[in-house]
Length: 311
Image (cartoon, rainbow, N blue to C red; front, side):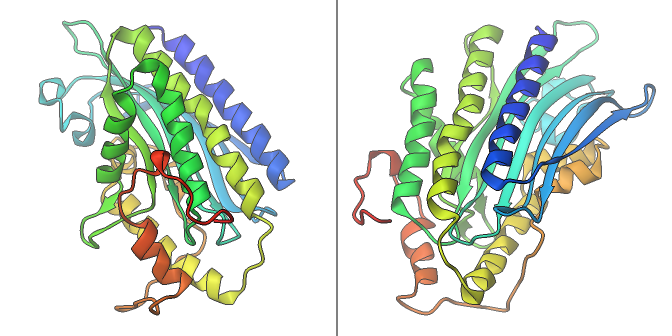
């Protein structure tokens, strides 16, 4: 286990992503470095990179954290009960971007390493992460591009990974109480250690490196489209679903809160504005209804041919 190698990659990835996003937006991200004092429930350090009220991004964060704790929290041992009670080390880069323009989708990406450190045994190391797209107004071209980029990133590591990780994403980012997906999916994986440390870390790097090629062209294509109050209102309504998922189901959020993590960093993923309405339904045939009928359902986006060239 080469902790420094993973840390160096993650910090470099964070910087590359922030540099590109600053170019797209024209505004600099703020920098907030933090450190936990030794001897507490959780030790370690991190680097928050945050933008608010930019030209393109209404709110977004690209966070790095590297922590060590005395006991793995329940969210991390749900599938590994034999590691309950073990000390741990975890590090990762996590980002969420909420654009102003409702025609630009919200995006989430996370790449992380966990190591359980049983006192009388070798460390147990695994990787997790993925990326997913949450549009408010769907464009087939964007969803296809995003999924094809994810597939291309995984192909060098085995043709079986993309179908497996895509299905995992479709199942994970699903609001069970709403009976609907959060967005159009992407890829998601956890507890990944196939082929040993070097192979698993290599796969993680492929996913992290694919984020900008997957998302940057979508932002460039959509952020200049005209929108009005109707579109912003629907965006705020759909953002409510994002909040519900992150606070009820998201394992990363639960892990951070259960382990005594830094609340401001953990809740960075929340949108700046969200709304809820009682029993609201979109008008039949409207662009809002099309999101539900055409996009909020599993589709093999990477293999589809566009039916609308502009979309």
